[in-house]
Amino acid sequence: MTKIKKKMILGTVIIVLLIGCGIYIYAQCVGPVYQSSPWDTYDVRINNNCYSYAFNTMKSTFPHSPGYGSGFDECFPFDATDCCLKDEGEMVSRVLADMKKKLTLNISLSSASGSCLTGGTKVYMAIKPYDPNNPSIPGDVHFYRQDGPGGEWSHKRGSSFAINYYDYDDWRDITDPEDAAASLGYTVGGTYFCYCAGTTEQGATGAPIQ
Image 1 (cartoon, rainbow, N blue to C red):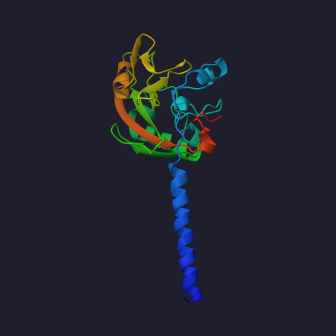
Image 2: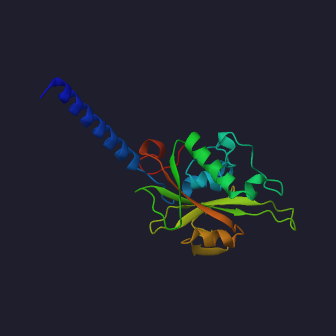
Image 3: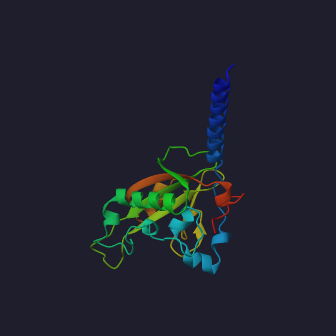
C-alpha cells in the first residue's frame, strides 16, 4: 500500500471519528426536571418569567421579551400596535434568534406529537391576543415546558411561582399544554420547540443555567 493511500485512509478514519463524536456530544442533552424550589426564592422569582423558565435560563439579565436579547425591538407591553402578537411567525423568529445567538442551545421547531432528542426538552408557546374591548389588559405570550416524569408540563406566570398544574385555582396536571394555555386565554397560534443543552450548559442534573 502506498503512502498516499495510507494517508487517505487515515484521513477518512479521522473524519468519521470526528463526525461520530460530534453526533454523540450533540445527543447528550440534559433537560430540566420539574423542581419549583430553585425558582421560588424572591430574587429569582421576580427576575424570571415564563420565557426564562421554559428554556431553563435563570438569569436576572435574561431578555424577558422574546427577541430583545438578539437585536429585535422590545416586545412589551403587548398592545394593539404590537407586531409580535399580530404575526406568530415573528414571535417564533425572535425565540429562535435568542436561543441560537445568546444561549447557544440547539433548538428546532417541533409539533405536539414530535419527539425531541433523548434528554431534550419540548416547549410550547401560545399567544393571548390584545382585546380592544378591554384595553386595560394587554395581550401576552406564554410558554410551557415538558419536564414531568410522565411527560407532564409546567410553567411560571410572570414573577409568580413555578407550578406543574393549570393555575392556582385549577390543580389539574398539565398533560395537554394547548388546553392549559387556552384556559388562561392564550388561544392564538401554538408553536412547539425542542431544545438540547449539553452538560456544560445545564449541569449534570439539568440545573438551570446561571
